[in-house]
Image (cartoon, rainbow over the protein chains, first blue to last red):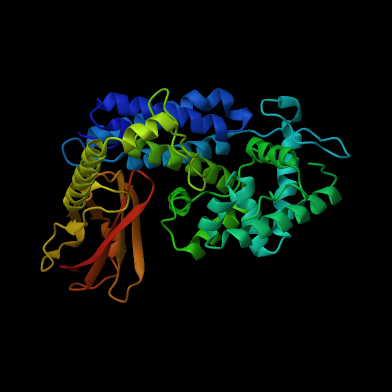
Length: 181
Length: 247
């Protein structure tokens, strides 16, 4: 099988797989909650096995682009995360009353607090006007203003204003819920 | 766009970052995610209104939000893999929406270029040549039918001649195509388009319709069947509807 583009071009298929494995590891580290930290290696392994299996099955029949393989790895991870979620026994601790503060990753003692804050953010987002909600959602997902504007099909200036006003409303709503970001 | 950042007066940057951390640390389960839909939204392969609909789900559901973050990270990594990751010591290309830093060329270097028009002409020729090669390769890629680009795939074809009447005890459906499929579903309908049987997660390109589900159909009835291929990326490719008579 030939992989034509980027670091895959001219490199052995194994080198392309190494790049994919590295990128998967980074994506998992930046996306997965700390509670799944001990499962990251398993998740990575399952996704890589799927990719290798797919490449073996299509050998000589089709050329798989990196974009396609990355997508396969991504969907495999989503399936695995869903499977883990279905098996997980949740034992949420009661959270103290009063203002809460978001926690740093890997702080198991306050993970339940993070979950409550996340829930409060989601509740408050639902109370925003739709366009503000969409713009702030992408901002909280880590998108820049130009990226959010492009994804939502709006002018950058309008998107920036929506984020600005949306964040203001979000802060007010969170304060009412006792959450001080 | 102004220099003002959204969080300057409403939520300080650190506050936004803390909220992002809380969202990331939230391992609440949420609704089942249509991973393929999220991927296509992130890659802007969906119309804008459908992208907005996906972002709505992301705003309300932790599982969809997680999928969005993963799709965003993997999509960026895929794009870098496609165009070539920077070698060690090189500067990574800017992500979408970021401005590339201006490259500072020392004055001596600029003078050196200005003083050598022949070099500049050769460089221009090389650029044109590289451009031509890239265009030709892109055309070759477009013409290559075996090349898989998510979604584009070979059609599903019936291997049962349409005129063939099949017996109740051996109503065997066969099909071909979509070599990358990981499993198959078959939907069987009567002539009035009422679906009366469905089989999921088949591993071979063949399925025998159980005789009991055909029991109520009269001899000579037209049976409509449609096959769906489940692709490795989770998406589904539907075939045409085929028709065979019941003997």
